[in-house]
Image (cartoon, rainbow, N blue to C red; front, top):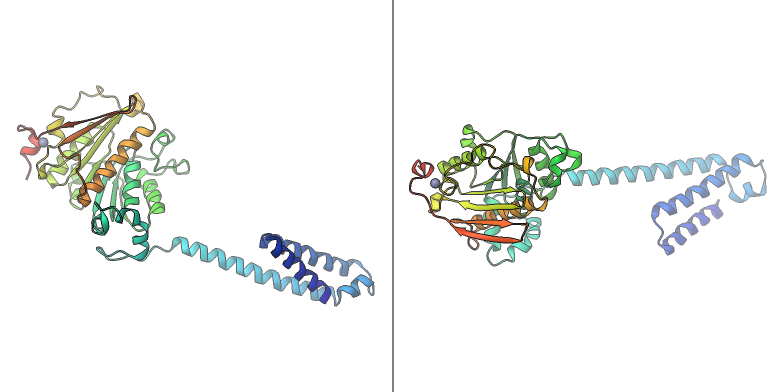
Length: 346
Ligand SMILES: [Zn+2]
């Protein structure tokens, strides 16, 4: 018996020296155990090999059983612990305070002079509503979550389908058929568990005014003019800055509309909505895959600047980006005296 145990120990030691995985070492010892039990069952009493391996088959069986139980129990415990680690949400910290893991997470932001600890706290205290979890909303939402914007609302009434995945990178193949707000929430939660997420599975309508009241900043990445004009009207009425962007085929445009701070609103700049069918949607005309990524990331960038006060936002300026020729233009814009939306401003 001593000889067999010594052999097992030697196998373990050799494995250790060769740095072979624990699983492989245990398998080798398992084979040794099987060989010994086999010898005891197959060879007649008094056979020299049986005498050399000592005691009886029962003892070996009990020993193997105990060892298997201990290893199985440890493996189960490890798996449960790993799962618990995954599901336990981080300790909520009060607004205005940041936990050690949060300080570590946002370190590259905090070291920027224009953001710093104060800016990061402002981001944490901020509430941002994103209308549309599509091409523009995907990168915007992911970067808002990664930036540490404390509360992120996402409004969309659509479900994920296969044609979305060419550009709507917050969604994934295994989430086809799910509501976009739910899919977006899963992706953001996986990226940053320290942010509070609020889903609104609906289309923006006049009744959404109350939702806008709960937010400091609105991002509109919707794909139709009705929603775009309504988002502007509601944002102006709620006196909230609006980052609005649009894309088609190879071209994108983006600005920050904030009449409460003296800038024009969306309708100041685009007084007449195009006749239905005049401006084709992405579904009708197509769109280059990375384009919404570029413009949507710019939306998040403008949001971070508006919220922290860093640099100069696109308020009063419209950026037009032509991806096909890699050209960008920035046009100055002013409020329009006869804008009905600004005239109705509270
Ligand atoms: Zn206006």
